[in-house]
Image (cartoon, rainbow, N blue to C red; front, side, top):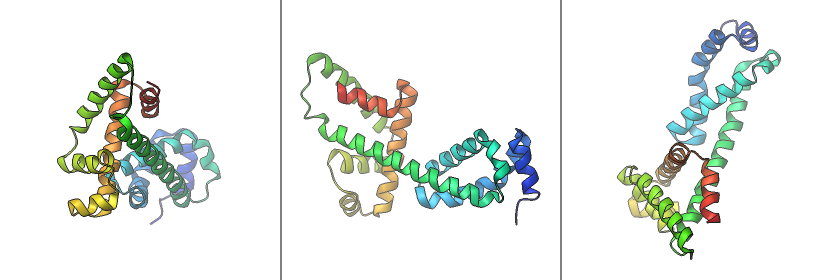
Length: 195
């Protein structure tokens, strides 16, 4: 069933009506979640993505007066944002993989070594908060350099489950860096690599 008086509601949202926006959000958020979840394959990531999409729609609400049908518009924005989110997650995962793989082999001066040890303890403390299976997947894929397929065979779980564990682990690490160190994850990695 279509959202009742959709054009009217979109007009109200475009004019800054928060109550109308709340109604739009409550009606369409489950629709958006069902759409982005199969793309992201992570409940937490999908929830975050939905919130980010609706924040973006609110910030760009002036454009809603040109929208003829909200559902296709929402799903187009949802698809683009989900794919961008995946690119960011995979980029962060690749960056962390490079760091973890090369960390022990790096030759650093005394000051840099102290800084590296602090970052190493920080990363280790965050990884200890993961579930045992997530930690095991991380160790296999990132510290031992196993592929998702190899980890899947070793642990007897599907490649898709391996991927979900890695996405969740990367998200936890990124959030911890931003929350506890007060810097963006990419900035943190840049500091580590430049040390």
